[in-house]
Length: 236
Image (cartoon, rainbow, N blue to C red):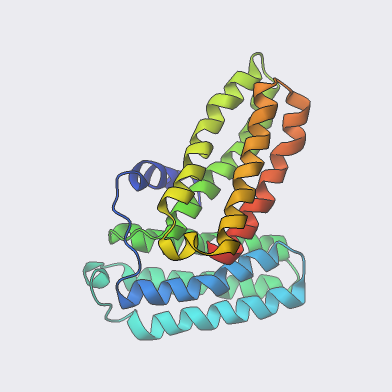
């Protein structure tokens, strides 16, 4: 999810009524999202064979969405003039990623696949649909921004204070993950454990900021990615 989508994700999610999958298109997109997450994860794990298998499954799952709904989607997507175009754009992302994977260009394929997350989120946004994945996407966008910006801030005068200010949004979005999780996830011990790991990684990072320990902060900062990735892969 690109940072330019964060304004909607961060500001809108707090006030929007969460729309759990209640229509066939959202259900189908949600089903297709699991193999997409696997493809995104595999291209980041440097395994070409696993990435090829994952992208093939992701393509097939999205093909089902396209064949069933691209031409005549039911409500609430039936008024979206760009629905079919965006569905085709997701398919094109998968095609390009598959080509890159076959060329063993896994980092490029991973970056290419990130675009599909944006496109799927945009379909929902345009049609007033919010699912748990949107909260995960909001957290991801802010996490990536902080991973890039925080080390620079920490090196400045009063840098750790600037870092603490910057981290406030990420801590808020982490709380939203728990607050907006549907009941079936909150009753899943695997989800609860994964979410707790994410929360603990942020708490440990916060302790380094409170201690004004810039060196420890820079050491722990990259480690917040792992818990998020595990949560995203299984439940995002």
